[in-house]
Length: 335
Length: 170
Image 1 (tube, rainbow over the protein chains, first blue to last red):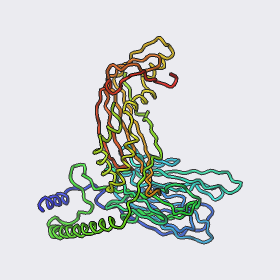
Image 2 (cartoon, each protein chain N blue to C red):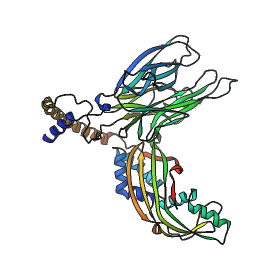
Image 3 (cartoon, each protein chain N blue to C red):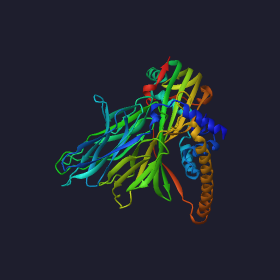
Image 4 (cartoon, helix red, strand yellow):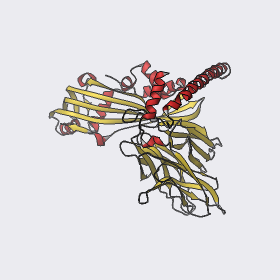
């Protein structure tokens, strides 16, 4: 017990970086989108002094979300999440806007096309997209928007056919929110069959991504992609050409608790006085031991029943693609 | 003659360790890491030769000696370094049904020092001295599975039994 108590004392008394003083918080706003033949923009703001980490939307299938991206007004010092919605229906439709805000040191970047690169010494904590979609010209449906570890943010698109007689054309832009002074995030990945899936972090979810796996059928539509506390949740609609359920990959971006630059450990919410923690610790350790015992019993029962009833799954691994390249811009030769 | 596979995994135990870092369910991750291991079964010196064939003093000497067939160039290079990235996308099928795709990224950082080599007729014909350090990292979906570095004697690793063409014209 003694080393554990000592650790907690150090943790409580250590100064913590601003990032960890308040965990990221979700802000929501419900808007009604009037009918319109062009996409309309709606925003939800972070509280003053908070930085935008990521965000998203929760919409009805009657509308199409063509953009979901960070928006930073440096002149007014306001940070927001922006959602572009096209409502071709005849009546107004509800859409919920979500923004996840924190006290991190972040920078937002964007680039035309399907990727945005984070600056050196930063890591992607969130990201988004905008597709200039018009019913009169067609455009690109977003089938993926996800972190690219070590690089930034990427999106996948499926071109929508233009109306008869119109010239095909679309324009997309990718956005990344990049955090400074953070350890490389842990990525929790989960594959699910649509309509709805969620993947979570044990602490400090900063954002998330989604990616449709396999073919991109017409009619595929992401109706919700959003942070909900500790989870990243996505809802989509569509069926494959052979009427099979579509699979998507979800990624939750989790910023792990790491050592602070001065070597002191960081905890997410250490607010109690150290002397008050002793009874809590004793009770907590007891609870953990009990939970572990229950877990061991459950696991052993489960593995026994699996051995009895479930046939072994056949795993096949196929190398689908292989690309390689030298980083010529980093080539150095001294003669 | 060390392969990338040997550098990354060392042996079967290294593959098991990488599989355990990839996922708790080792039954699947062993199969995945095993497939990656097979795909990396080529010599590290091959990558170095590709780099030289892309841009290097050796390539310049190769072009020069190709134009002048009687010319023999002895090339010395103090240092030469370049990173190489290799991305592998693997589909995982359970009972024949596609479940997910995992992207592996291998990065080799090659650094050659004190190179002395001979080039003639557009080909590398001998390596007299040289040493190279190779740093390697293997990540899966952003998670680092292996990271290590090792040094080699280039004259041992690049045994030239027959001249190596330095560009496609040769």
